[in-house]
Length: 365
Ligand SMILES: Nc1nc(=O)c2c([nH]1)NC[C@@H]1CN(c3ccc(C(=O)N[C@@H](CCC(=O)O)C(=O)O)cc3)C=[N+]21
Image (tube, rainbow, N blue to C red):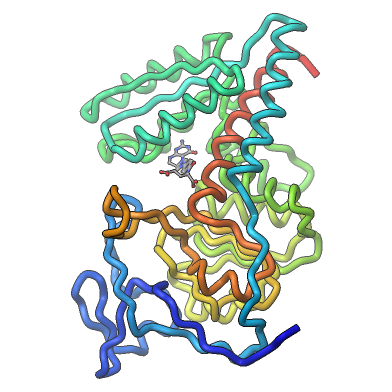
């Protein structure tokens, strides 16, 4: 192997270095350089999921003191192709079920408000259902809908035998209590796996959740399908959200990995992450995980989907992950791209959970 000590330079940071040793934040704030050593931003920034920020990082670089091959390139874990294959497998099962017992799995999706990203996701879910023969039921409610109205729809779908899965698109408008809405979904139809009873079972040894949340399940499915060992490995999950980070860590633990969760209050996140054989990044901050955070040969699953300004793109923005791909792919042994990584797998797992639910309801194997 042609090894060399090398310096990577890339456009992976959302900050730029000034000659005076300070950082310019995208928001225009200036911070002393030392604040940036962990890569976590000490100031609350607006969510990158809803807002594009410019990438200005001309002078930023990281120096890797480890021996790496400058030509090295990680294997790309192709979530888009894997999701397509899973959809084909599901389509076969759906038609087998239809032929045998005349039942088609049904998924109800409830969307409240008019967030553009949510509308896109819901449209993609509907399209994916159609592609495998799952019947979709869609409810679109205006932003100012009362919580009781949403609960009524959930109760209707709970009773409806044609519906095997119910998904309430998140985030809900701020006047609603997300907990009471999610609690209303019947456990048997909780294909998102967000019900506290399902999360509780996920956390307990010897218990089986009815459904596992789709995004973390998609991450593990990618590792399995790419024959990446989890048992006995050190896994670091970056981010502790209820819908990705926390359940991802629980799933990895069930697969016999030794897990660590790092989050915004972890002082030495970079150092801890560098010990990981498997990294799952789910923070929602563009390019936060730099090449220097990655142990040579590690496997990286990047859950982030962050819009960043891109003049070359006709939409004016492009999507990037939580991991600086250009840097990390030179150090890791395998990595998921964004887009085309975990995103499509999330939807494939939703279809899979819906099929599982329908099978259970009709005792069809
Ligand atoms: N109750 C609920 N369940 C969810 O599963 C849920 C949710 N709420 N709220 C929002 C998040 C986000 N999410 C994604 C699904 C697919 C892609 C996906 O397919 N992304 C493509 C690109 C999409 C694009 O180009 O915009 C990709 O990564 O290749 C992304 C994100 C599900 N979520």
